[in-house]
Every structure is written in structure tokens, then in C-alpha cells.
Image 1 (cartoon, rainbow, N blue to C red):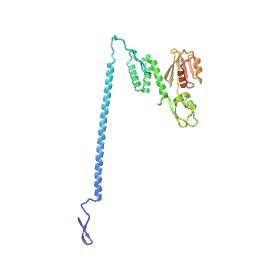
Image 2 (cartoon, helix red, strand yellow):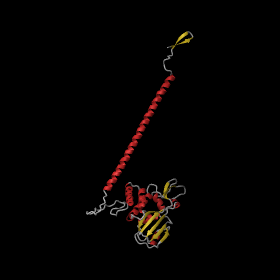
Image 3 (cartoon, rainbow, N blue to C red):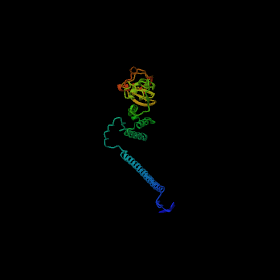
Image 4 (spheres, rainbow, N blue to C red):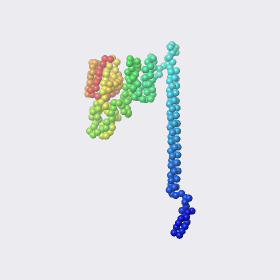
Amino acid sequence: MAFAQGKFGIEYNPVRTDEDSPALMLWTLGVVFLVALVSLVVTISSRKSKEAKDAAMISAEISASVAEERRSNAEETANEQPAPEEPVAEAPPEPEVPPPEKIAVAGTAKRPAKVTNLLMRLEEAEKRHDIAMTIETIEQLRSLPGNPAADLDDPLARRLGVLNMRRLFGPDKSPWTAEVVVKRGDNASRIAYEHGSTLASFAKLNGGNVDKVVIGKKMRVMEHPRFSLVIHRLTKTADLSLNGKFFKRYYLNSEVKGEIGAYEKPERIRPFWAEKGISLDAEDRAELEMLLPRGATIIIAEL
């Protein structure tokens, strides 16, 4: 209790001095809240740091495990491929029929290490369905100096052609196409012509039906493809190149009668085939007519 000088002398003051004032109480609550907040932040930081360390340890363990597994698989593969110096007396097993679109390498002679490594890489790319990696590996195999994989060149070329067509007309973007937005006044023929392509390839890239081109719609078109077709008299094959690189191989049904030389694809190509004695399967002929724009180079060569 406290006393104070009042009007009538010393009077009783009901205010207790030993009680906390409101300001003191607020300050105390603030200090308590601040301490709790700091403690919470420290706890969360410690937990996150521990989680990060645990994640790093797990990642390291996984990487080590994967490396060990790969090393083990490599050793097993090496052990499974003995190279006896003397011929084996037992009859060799019947070769397995390769799955569709695979490169058959069974029964071939021992190859240089670089060829073997590329063939192993090709097999891995096929297993992973990695089209880009498969195409790159086949191109490397076919371009090796001295052509050490010459016996595989034809199946490699066939496989490469299948993959290139799948890449060109597949749902994903390809290095040979561009995306255009239809504007007022556009139609399918105009878009194909402006991009140096054919109406047939433009239709195939966009689902086959381009009778009605909708303004504002995004469509795909081949971007000024530089096709050239080399027809080999001796081997009765026709190699199609796109922008300077091999694209696909076709096979002729008869000997070529046309003279050796370079020609431009005319607007009407079928009379040209007949005149030069170039006979193809109907499907292959239609595919070439779809891909080759007017003016594309067609070369008739001896080899």
C-alpha cells in the first residue's frame, strides 16, 4: 500500500506499487515471444541441416552402389566372353533371330575396339529407346575411317532411315521442321510453298487433314529441306540425303536405264521415273514424291 498527500492530509492510495504496470507486462511478453521465436528458428535450421547431410550421404551411397554394380556387370560380361585360342569342337548354337529393326552382328569377325564400343553404345541406346543417341551412334559407325563396319553398312543404313522418318514425323520437335502460326490469307499449299516443302509432307506433319487451316493455329512444316537422291546403278539402291546428311536408303526393283548425270525433280515426277527406268515399290515411290520438293537434285551414278 502507498500513502500520498491529499486535500485532507495523508490519505490512502489504492494503487499497488508491487504490481506490474501494463507496459512492463507487454515488454515481458515480447521478450518471451522473441526467445521462443529464436528457439524455433534454431530448431528448424538444425533439422534442415541434418536432412541435407542425410540426403548427401544417401546420394553418395547410391552413386557408390551404382558404380559398384556397373563394375560388377562389366566383370561378368568380360568373364562371359572367353576368347579361346583353339577352335571349339562343339557345334556352334543356332543364331538367335534378331528383333525387328535391330542390327544383326552375330557371326561377324572380331572387330576393332572402337567398333565394338560403338556397337555396345548402340545396343544401350536401343534399350533406352533414345532415338537421338541411336542415330548419332549409327552415323559414327558408318563414318569410321577405313569403313571397318562395312559388312553392317546396309542394315545400319536401313535402321537409320527408319529412325529418321520416325523422328521427322513423330510428335516431338525435329531439327528439320519449324512451327508456324496460321495467319489470315494462309492455306496449306501456300504455307508449304513458302517453306520450300511439299503439300503432302505438310499434311503428314499435321495429321493428314489440312483442308481447313484455322487462323491462329500452330502447325508444323519442313523448313526449306535440301533433299538430294543418288541412284546407284550397280547396287540398285537409292540414297536420300537431307541437308547434306544421309537420311534413308531405298531399293530398286530393276536396272536403271537413265544416263549418268544430275537432274532436277520435275513438277510431275512419275513420267521421270518411267523415262529413266527407275522402278520402286509403290510405298517407297509415294514416300519420295512426298519428301522431294520441286527442283530437288536427283543423281544417277554408276556405283
